[in-house]
Image (tube, rainbow, N blue to C red; front, side, top):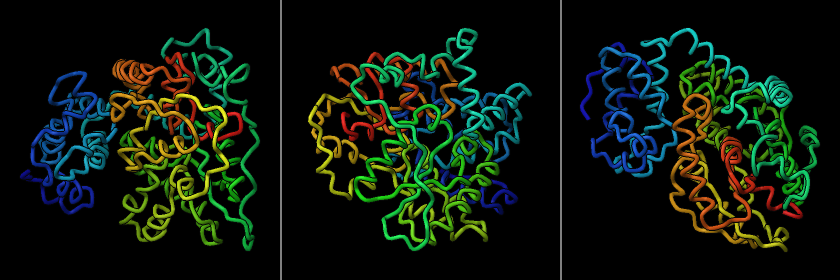
Amino acid sequence: MQTRLPDSLLATPLGQEADAILRSCVHCGFCNATCPTYQLLGDELDGPRGRIYLMKQMLEGRPVSALTRGHLDRCLTCRNCETTCPSGVQYGRLIDLGREMVERLAPRPAPERLMRAGLRKALANGTVFGTLLKVGRGMSWALPATLQGHLPSLQKGGRGDFASGSPLQAADKSPPAPLLQKGASQRRMLLLTGCVQPALAPETNTAATRVLTRLGIHLFAAPEAGCCGALSQHLGAAETAKAAMRRNIDAWWPHLEAGAEAIVMTASGCGSLVKEYGHLLRDDPAYAAKAARVSGLTRDLAEVLAREDLSAFRTERPRPIAFHPPCSLQHGQKVRGVIEGILSDAGFQLLPVAESHLCCGSAGTYSLLQPELSNQLRERKLAHLQAPGPALIATANVGCQTHLAAASGVPVVHWIELLEPGG
């Protein structure tokens, strides 16, 4: 694709990267075949190729309007298009750059700005989110139906069902183990606890800690670490996202220097971004080298367990499972088939699921900002997941888990819970 970006923009890192990505596109349109929003809406501008043209025009200095912003907003950032692109177009990175720029060139109305800022602040702060969740549960009767669906205690088939008579045992909600002590001999790995996961699905990190403990691996959290930055990154607030990245690097660095061998991600959405820290901070002289090391040591939980002897975790209660691989896992991190292999080796029956490559509609804040499209994608996904008659639906990201559980007639869990005794 030919480009004519102004010299002033080409002199910036954003302009140089965007220009290189645009030039790699050959207009073939293969991407539209795997784009969820294009399949739903049938609009060229709601597919990757059309959005690339819109971003090209914006970067070249053409007028930008709310129409442009709306088409970019409707992108899930699922990156499924990247898997079918013969030219290797880095669409996920381009859409982040485009959103960053459109926020400046076509400012949103004040109510929209306030809402997005509120989401970034509330969801990125675990303490604030936990408090709001408790208030929401207590006043659920006063909430709109769209918000009620995001409260775990109100979800059909969600984790609330497991407290009594569930196929999974109730989880111990004890906090992560103490911080790494320099010189200790046991294998140690850092854990990013996440923003919303401790409140929405505390069982996940508890189960991960127990499983790794049985393998002789001490999992611990750096209390200074917080949001990975994904919320801000995908909402066009790149500098806020980078501030979160630097804070996390500062929190993890002493432990990495002391011998922690990996940074474990139990939410694939977080893992997808942390693995990009090195790229996103490559021009920061104070953090570039550290960010590259952090990204290089970041592992999805499945990548860690795939290298261990899991024979002790074979289940005595083999059950049919439908697995939903999150987009951030299969398209973002390109970790494919690993969890399925672990669960199959543990004795579970993995059922075939149609359209497993397509997004469930959660996509971070997408389910809140684009509820109509999000719900359509969820209905389509659940129809495929439930069609083969699973006893459980398993996934690897808290957003997908919560979103699917809100409308599922089958319990939805994080896959690591299945390796727990009684799972």
